[in-house]
Amino acid sequence: MINLFNTHIDTLAIHRVGNKSRNEAIFLSEQPFNLNDEIVPLIKEFFFKPFREKEENYYQFAHEVDLDYNDMFKYATEIFANPANVHEVSKKITKHLYEQSNHPHIKNGEVYVTYLTNLSIDNNVVDAIGIFKSELQADFLQFEENGSNLEMILQQGINLSKLDKGCLIFNYKKEEGYKILTVDSNRYDARYWLEHFLSVDAFEDENFITKKYLKFCQNFAKDVVLPAEDKKEEVMFMNRSVNYFAKNDQFEEQNFLNEVLDNPELIPEFKNYKVDKGEKYSIEDVTSFPIANAAVSDARKSIKNVINLDTHIQIKMDFINPESAEKFVEKGWDEEKQMYYYLVYFNKEEKS
Image 1: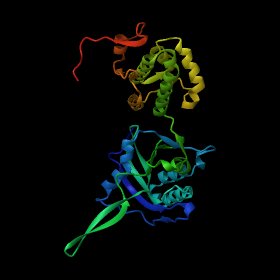
Image 2: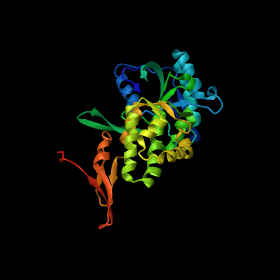
Image 3: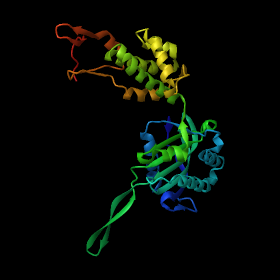
Image 4: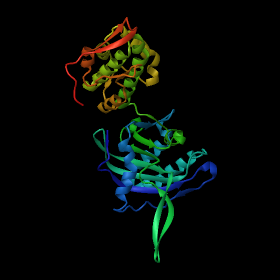
């Protein structure tokens, strides 16, 4: 988890990159931008708002041979070692970005490199480097008095409500390639920012593993539990899975299987499915890990707990109290109608 509420922008460098394949220029400012009290709150909101709204999926710098060959890892380490030198290193970062700007779809724009202090990540107060890019310009109107008339002037500028690209590189977990958050509002050039410029992989912490394991369970429910049992059991398996994660701090696979799989014959099916599909979710060798509560909350929002029937009726299960569905919902077969049915027990109807 991060907290940017008390973050301070210590230094801000602003440059511009064009599209190299179109022979557009690069412009490097000689001096850092002189921040003032009027612009600081606006620029902080511009930079940080996307990270507050986005799900926290962390990355880390990576290289197939050695981290020291990753250019951005080297530049980040250089800045963290000597924050006073951030402006000079920002020029190297901008040149590196320009070298990656060689696809026809990549747009020119302003590059902002900042040194940030007093950020909180995983309950640790650290410094960070912020790198942001604005690409798309918006039309806006300015008005000017001209004698007895008010003139309307059409101009273009950056919309401060939408950041096109950005990343926060935290001075944290250096040995693993630093912990990094990134945003990209424009999907036409996704590889350019993440792969070519930053060269990052997913940061495989407890948040990553928790999400991946729950996603794996979701697909096991769809591919194995549903065909073997029925839709109710598919929903209930995910219901029990999420609740196991919610009430435990540590995941233990055998305990998990004993608790969430009502049908013991599905336990070897689960293990076989993990052998086949585990690598896809990066959990092939995972049997125990700390559970990230934030990841469980995110997963609960995305998992469907509704049974949709072909008679245009929906039955919604309660993820908070799964025992209600276990006790008070029964599935059966009506010979006369040649149809399945759900029998729901209740004492009274609740007022909405």
